[in-house]
Amino acid sequence: MSKRARLQRLDDLKKKKIKMTPLSDSIPMSVNHKATKVKTETPSNSPKPPKILKPMQAWNVIDMETITWSRKGSDNPKLVPKGKRKLASFLLEPMVVLNSELGKDGNLKFAGDPTKARFIVELGKGIGDAPETLKEQHDMKQEECLQFLDDKTKEAMEYAFYEDLWNKKGELEPFLENANHCWKKEGIQLKRRLTSYGGESNRPIFWKKEKKDDSYKELHLEELPEGSVVQCQASLRFYSFQDNDREMYGSSLDLGENILVLWMPKAEYTDNIYVEF
Image (cartoon, rainbow, N blue to C red; front, side, top):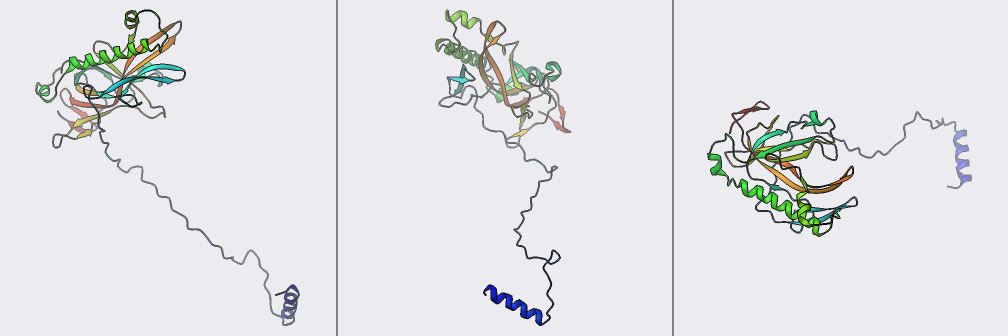
């Protein structure tokens, strides 16, 4: 309809005295709405699914090699699974707990600074007061396992020397003798950072084997008692850094994510669950 025709139509309607209501906000307009997706949240008190123990390789099974790892302008030896780049971790032989700081805060009360605090466990040879039947269930190649750690550490130190990673001059033997291996104590000492790089708790997970099907179930402990017999997941790490006017170099033994608890002295109450071995 032309503009002229529309004006004529409007004039005709006025002459017929038809009441016309002007559009205003009071008249609802037809609006098309998109469907809104309702977001649902899982209740915070819903039970978490049980954790599952991931496969681990024993120290005498895993195939490893030493590579050069460059980070932040420094080069260090790195022990990795053969053909891989990720740090190798392995399950140690069962050993007795000499002492530990494995509560939820590790050794924070001594360190003071969360960035310097660590979860710590020191392991030794033997099985303490554990029943002799434990030896029948495991190989107990403790001497061989400790020798494995020494051999792998020496290999990495020689690698650093011959690859000239740390710019050390002179003979190999003095270089090896001056290395600092802080994990060698009365037994062997393993450490783990208190928090992850994201600021979350980095506490290791304790596991106990179920008798009915040989599966592992998470064990909730406030502390790991001295005299317990455990298998720890571990990694060897090598470093070199400047400490005031002298350069420090050597190795540390890192505590992995998992600790298999084979036996604990007497019986422990843990989260109202009576645990008996």
